[in-house]
Image 1 (cartoon, rainbow, N blue to C red):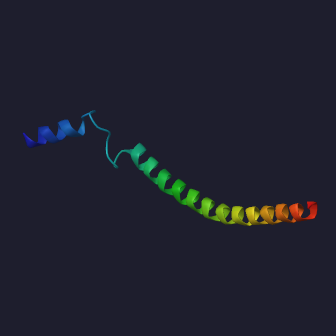
Image 2: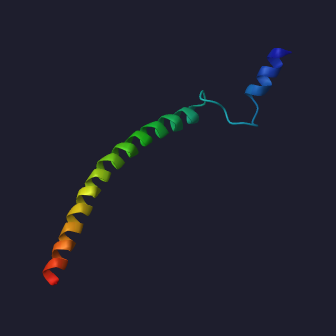
Length: 68
């Protein structure tokens, strides 16, 4: 009886299969790698954007002083 219950649950389509399913494993790994890449990208370009904004704000302040 227990074996029949287990077989029924394994073949059930009520919920998606777990990490043993090939697609689930693929998307789990993909999500991990993509998340790492995104975090590295954001860290790098966040710092670069700070530099750009500092430069632009100083340039605009200098232009306003020259205009007065």
